[in-house]
Amino acid sequence: GNRFWNLLYMTHVECDDRPYILAVQSILSLPMPSKIITQDATAACLDHCEMDLYLFLEQLVPKIEVLRNQLREGGVANLAKAARKMSDKIRNWMKNSSDEYEGDHLVPKAGLKQV
Image 1 (cartoon, rainbow, N blue to C red):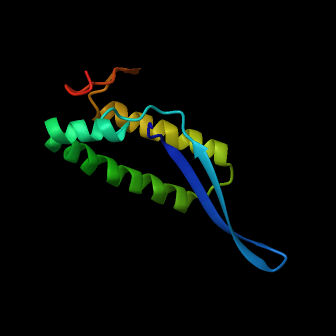
Image 2: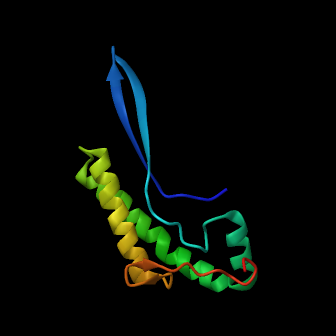
């Protein structure tokens, strides 16, 4: 199946003097980069453009960590608002660091094996 972006918010709550972990998942309305949209796409990229995939991941992973830290530091009073804000930040990052955007338009690149 296709991978997707999501925001998973977890917190500790206490109810009747008992501790619980509350988790809420929000699927973000963002396209997944074509290099990692499916396991097959990632495998094809590894077969034909392995270094491109590694370079992409070396940029992506630190960006996600920065966003996680921003959420932790800022707190989450409104999950829907936080999800929109994170979506905007990820979309802007993809526009600036990916060859899959022409201005504001997504133009996914398909690898040789996918075509």
